[in-house]
Image (cartoon, rainbow, N blue to C red; front, side, top):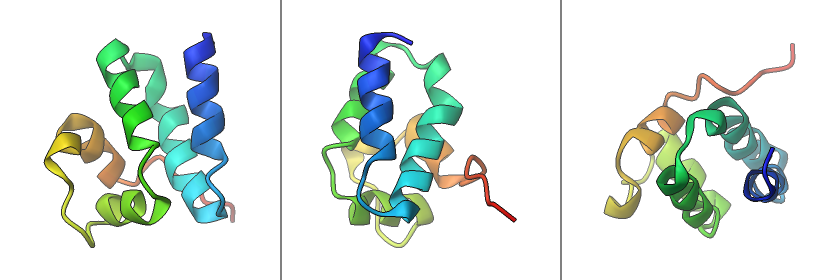
Length: 86
């Protein structure tokens, strides 16, 4: 894993709450391997947003800002990447 991906992974998995870690970190783990430079930059920008906003966009309780609308957010909104321990 290159340096940028390692840094993004760390930031995605260390958000401050377990729920945000699972949502954002789980999304990164599931999808990052296929991302190009533009998508990596978009995800890095997303990580500057608050967890509350990211989670609200993902679960559909707030409208997604135009800058994040598109395939990445659509994939995040599926929520099929979160492993639920049973």
